[in-house]
Length: 365
Image (tube, rainbow, N blue to C red; front, side, top):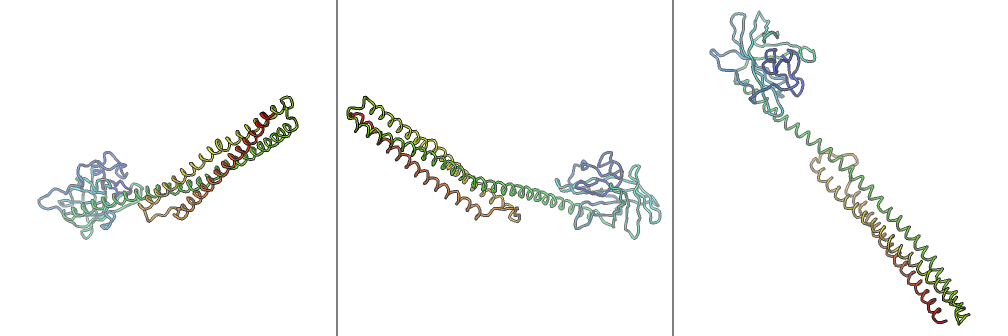
């Protein structure tokens, strides 16, 4: 016979029990799959007349019943015939089992039970039956049976079945807890990544603001040239009231060209640069929303398993600080961008005024 040593318990105590419940498995090898059964508990031994003596063993203990073994036999001299019934725990269905018959001999205190061509040996002393057998790992194991009735066996079967359901629920809960821990760990990693991304988002806006500053500088340079050329046209027009053979108007066209350069610069600031910064601010808002959403998911998943605290668990203070810094950076970027745009437009208005003065001088001569 074999005592269950893993989740799937050996469905026999002897070789015939193996043959009856587990197919052709060897006498001392644990089956890899539960025996095929059609009932959720081992069938009680059929009634007999006279009532056969019964012996019950619960493995490993009544407090933690994984399997119940029940032997009934009828003795004639040194010969016995009987039935072995087994109920073992199955975490899916609660409990299941089967039974098989045997013959054997009793000589003094020595007992030998034959299940087909296999025999388990033991002792019968003071109404306590002890059977020894080799377990699947090669170690010598024993089952101790004490006198019991069919009612005792049925009660043991009920305990095994109840224990199976409890174990199934415990395993299901353990699996759910493990999944909850895995989900919470993933949430923590996601929130940490969100905070890191959010911290980098203002950098892009600052970089594009720097490009806007560069374009403003170029626009001021073009405006300075516009002013210089305008002043030359006005001086030339004052010196040559007749237009200096068309040179005054020619130079005035140069001022117009300078002013168009300022207009191009202004368009770079108000157009391309502004679009880039606006995209940066939109990304910043999106990253903030993602962080807030992922943090709320983390809190909900953590509430499902409040006893677990993942390493690096983010706090509301940390998340709120990241969101606050991002919001402040976005507000500052918008104000700075608006100021630069206003400056660019003012530079263009000034350039257009210079151009208008140069064109007026051309018309005058």
